[in-house]
Image 1 (tube, helix red, strand yellow):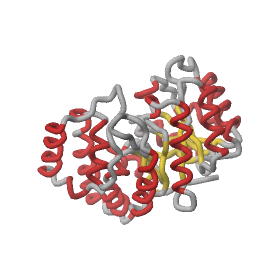
Image 2 (cartoon, helix red, strand yellow):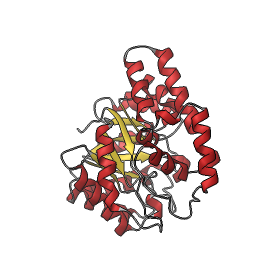
Image 3 (cartoon, one colour):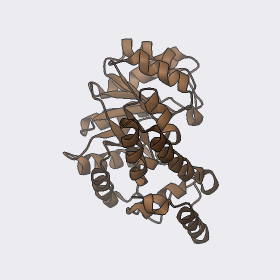
Length: 300
């Protein structure tokens, strides 16, 4: 079974000023990830604005990342969609173009009404990318599908031969630990909340997937190193730096993450509608806030 260890960065979708995809920027994103010792990239996910992309754009973006990353680092392609059939097409395309793994979140418009319905949808998607490792992307704050992973795991482990684990983006730490303990060596439950990574590590996380790992990897590498050395005091200090950084996001919105990626050294352009991009005045205000918080020099 494929297992990850360390930081998996949720990859941005680079865009031109007019909102079209800037595929020529993808190799720069990959080289940045390699240089900063990220263990993989998670492509076409929430950070990649997948829900604002057409299926053709998602095909092209996956191909660009897979081509640029070949022989350099693993790529997990997210195939989740409101449509199970579309998800299956995306999963099959990822497999056929050399992805290392595929992930998919729960259908989020016509939502599964119970755990069995969710498992059946995931079985369809996983079968389309078999024998590639398949991960369930659990993010109830955005999908509205909030069954306990612990209750779902027995079905996925028994009925999906290529089931490899879960990207667990939720604050239910009890469900997280029970899921890690139940999965054991049979599946990997990757942690998906950057702001409480230290809690995830304490509960057994070996790998974490998140957006801020891309533009602020130094914070998290130091957190991981301190935790591995048993220095919890230092680890908490780095987690606090992470929380301060993330605390800016509600005020400035999603687009500020793309601005931070630019500050870290890779210009990935604006966010796509309906996300509102920062005005020059707000962008400068944010830069000053980062500088005052002594966070600006920790990007990149």
